[in-house]
Image (cartoon, rainbow, N blue to C red; front, side, top):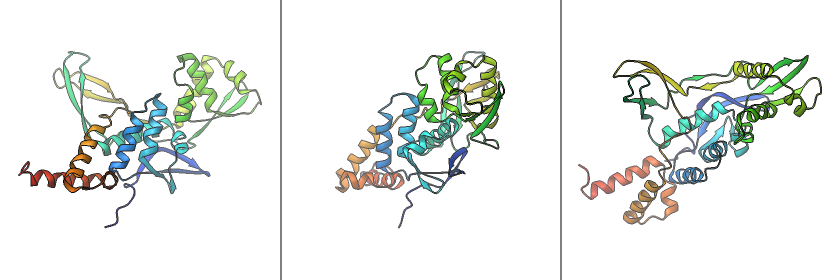
Length: 279
């Protein structure tokens, strides 16, 4: 039986502009042991968050539109698309549903909430995405929605410097011909707010806060989610599975890692059954 190299397509809330076409369909690679190993190794090379996300998605994403994905393409996805892909990937690697524990803001007691990673609330990009224009001091400024690459450039900066650094990184042109550095340095807080609002209007977004009621005191509150947080790489469990299959079937590591996850787990189930470990 021939197996596809990728999963079914998912639709990005934003998309990647390629040759004037906004590509919104993304396919993950079929999750084999080799893909899991590559993702786990990328997770273990954690640097700043944008580099971490790019490393993981570079290993996991098969294609964007009709094009094979590249590291450069992953860097140029907008931040919301990268968050969305990380949450969807966690559902493939672990479980669709995840239980998280939060502390009530009112009664202070813990409660559990189930998150559905396949139905993440999103705000889709507006017309014109990924570009916005804003007029400041008689000059037309053209910008793009922040990407992973823009985010990486300000990683580690203090807040005030990071805000101006991000604005500078997102500016594509200034109609008046002013140098970008001097222009950004001269922006007032009100003008920076205008830029932020212009980008906000067209930008997609992924829900990182969910309104819920405490099941104990019934207080309504917002609980916050980390879109980059999964259950870890699971690398030790993968090594254990490879060991079990090699021990019982005498397959080499490459053969085992090339198996799709569902087939690998099926063989492990057969081993457990043969050993009388399941009914």
